[in-house]
Length: 494
Image (tube, rainbow, N blue to C red):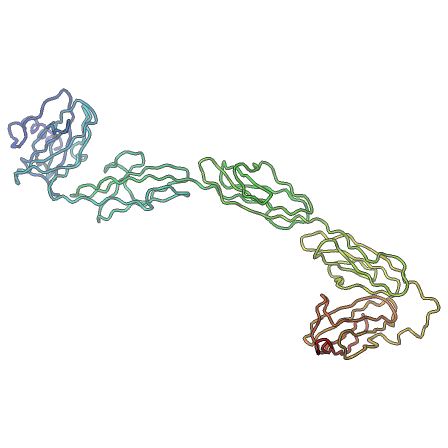
């Protein structure tokens, strides 16, 4: 059946000059030629027998007839095998159709480019479709989303057409799309560091194909920000900081002076050593040829080390009667824990907050502690309290407790006398407001009478308001409480 149809088409070609009724003269016969096996529609319907397909080439602004052929209808398909004369490749060949029923010439689409001795289309499955007519609708232009441009991250390109039922075909190699090109079904993925030209055309049966839409995309990669190992933070030992990037082939530049890294900054090649007792801010940025630099990554490292041991003021030694011992650390905000019973101090030992009063032989042991630091070694100081010549035993307290508060009420200062009957007794003397808040504290170790002068201020030296306050003396075996009243200062009454 196929052979029979082909023979009929060949016979039509040979007899065209006898059968055709066309408005064109015969084409000029050239040495070269090509053939096109075409299917022809007019206004979306199959062409009729006696319609004529003609091929033209425009030379110096003048149309030259290069071939014509009667259209035959075989098995409900209207078409013909047209011989087109051409001596060179890449001449643009356009088509027109003589509509015998309407007795008029109608334009046809699409055009082709010549190929000497070439053949376009074949019977019956690969016929070259030619659309003719004065009332043909054109498929809408394909539209790209996102639009053409330069982007800093990978993109998925969608192509849409507003003509219902249209199919979109596209190319990525710069060639014009045809119905043999890639059918668009899913977004086109464009990875980083790519330059891509997408050409798209939409087709719909019975319609003229859309114009070709073109979009050029430049995908510039962005280097990922470097990351630090170990992470930023406070460390008690020296550290070696490793910088890494998730972007293969990137270089990391860094600074340690707080400035913004550039391509001229130090190139990272080996871990960055951070010594003890140092604070360092590392800023790092990734660079790669043809890519945008990464965001700046920043990490602050506080390398602490071991706290120095506390110091004693006054130093260890022999003293007459009572002595007040201050404990100090050269590191700000370091907490000092101490003992006076010979045990080893730790973070659960009493926290130093005020001078320690001692009236008998005492050994003080102390350590310094702070978050992120290694606790200090133990500092030890032994104090010997020398006896007073001819001591008066009648001055020994009869009981442990608060023995006197004078004057009470008071305005500017009050004298508080406590007595410690038992030897080597550690004590705390706290002053509370009526909210139960401790506003001042004294602490000590010893035996006998001890007198404190309170100026009515809190531990920071800030004057407290007039009102009722509670004294509490605590030892391991005894607790004593007494009320005191602070009146408004005489200076405030004038």
